[in-house]
Image 1 (spheres, rainbow, N blue to C red):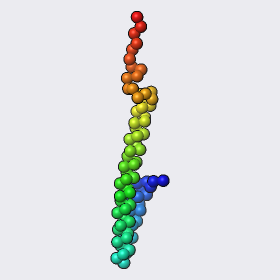
Image 2: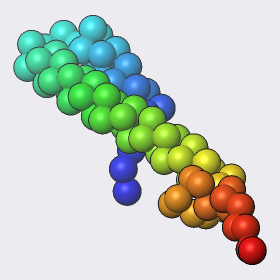
Image 3: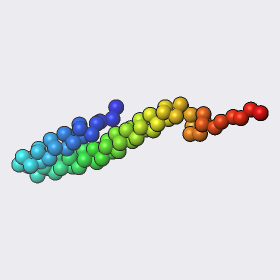
Image 4: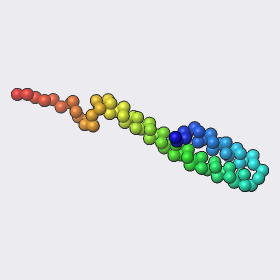
Length: 81
């Protein structure tokens, strides 16, 4: 299971708060590293969620065309002589 953008941003903010409240250097450094890791994961989550929305929009467009990969299907007239 992949974390959502909201979870990543929440965890990043939590780690930044821990870093700012820490009195020990090693705790502060570790919290800053964790915050950076959550920020990186948030960027990946944002890309995943955007891709999911684009894919859904593409699927809806395909359904509007009658589930055909050929956009001209059904638009050609067949003339019988």
